Structure formats: C-alpha cells, structure tokens
Image (cartoon, rainbow, N blue to C red; front, side):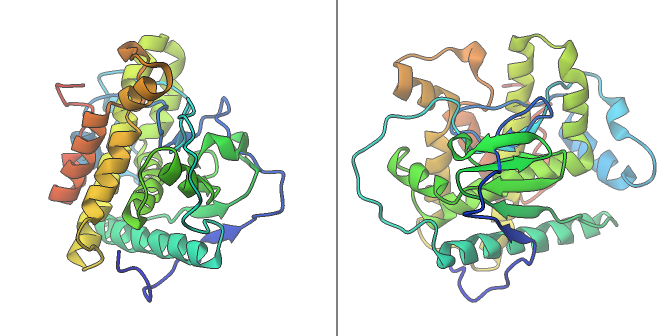
Length: 310
C-alpha cells in the first residue's frame, strides 16, 4: 500500500505498556473481526435499513423498528479467533509494536474517517468518528475486560475500537495472512462495526438476542460480521480509487478473509467443521462480501440480511 506521507487520524489513544485494559466480549458485547468467531444480527435488509436509517437517524426515528426479523446478541466486534490456530515456528518479520506500525494504523484510521465522512455527507448526515485504542496485554472498555488473545474488537458501549498491534504478527505467522492491506482490512472491519452501531444494527442485535436460541443467534451473527466485511470493502473501494493500492494488495485482504473463515479455522484446529456453530461466516462468504463492497463502493450493496445464501 502507498500509505506513507498521507494524513493521520488524531483519534488514536496509545495506552500500550500501561496494563489493565481488556479485550473481551462481555455481556455488553464486543464485535470482533473473527479469525474464526463472532456474533451478529439480522433483520429487514440492510440495504433498505441503510437507506432509511442514514436518512432518518438523528431525526428521532428508529428505522430498526421496521425490522421484520429479530436481531440478537451483545455486539462488539473483533478480528480475533475463538479457536487458536496452530502456531508456526517462524521468526518475526516485522516489529508490530514500532512507531511505524502506530503511524500505519493512524493513517488507515484517518482514511476511514475521510471515506465515511464523505459517504455520510452524501446522505446529509455527519459521521461520528470512533476512537482507536492501542493496548498491550489487556485493556478495559465499556464492554468489560479483554486480553490480547481475544484479538482486535469494537465496543458499541463506548463506540471505540481496540487493538493490540502484536495481533498483526499472529495474523501473519499463524494464519499466513501478512501484508499491509490485510492489516488495514482488520481495522476497516472493526470500523465497519462502528458504522453498524451508528445506523442502529448493533443496538437492535443486542436488544433482540435474548430471545434467540444459540443456532439462530449464530446465523444472525454471521450476517452482522459479513456486513462489516462488506463495509470494509466499501472503504477499500475508495482508497483504491485514490491510488493507495499496489499490485497484490487486494489478494492480501482476500487471503486474510479466507484464512479467518469459520470453516477454515475449524478445519485447521479440529480437523472437521460444524456449520451450525459458525458465527462469522465461511471463507467463501467472507471473501465474497469484502469483494462486493470493494467492487461497488456502495453501502446499499452490503445487505447481508436479505441475501438468500445466508
């Protein structure tokens, strides 16, 4: 990626080395970009929801009351695996805690701010920028305590994203998904959960999950996660138009999406898959929805709730 020398976000809090944070999925619900896990919500159809929701939010109208289906679950989001992948014996290639890595995520976050500010403005709305928190070891959020082992996550309770930058080493070494655009995809996915929180998808999911059984919860959770993938692709569409991407970058993101599919994670860790336990989406689904957002650049194309395949 051609990211150096571009504008960086000022909404990054560096709490590395301070300890006491947490990256968990409390009952309040975080949203992770799974490397194999997660929860999501379902409903009327995000295409319709987005058109109605973005036009109507801030007007005192809750478009999610129009949902015909139930959304349930405490949402937060994250790119962390529920099941750890087998570790490879491989020397680190990158210093994932360096100042350059911090500058990288500041730049990626800044680009998401620009893209989503523009998109929201097209609907006559203001984009509320999330804060990104860098931590090491563990961190406390409005969603509870969490550890680095849980991976990056979004907490809807405080509208903030959390990441231990050492996760990028795990992504490269354990999952074979290195590369700067793969890393950017992780952050863009968490920002995608922020978009869902703003337009009302996550609040509705959290509200209605209590009435759902585990199997239905997992199915709806997949839809939420895949939509966040699609929103990440929408961001990718715009940075590509601005000349950020180089040859092979898209393949990096698609490889990451492939490696963190529920089926890929389960095959790698236990040798077989249990489809009813999927809660982030299969490798094929994750690739499809990221590419869909990337190719269209439209929020309305990210209607995972209406998709017949899900």
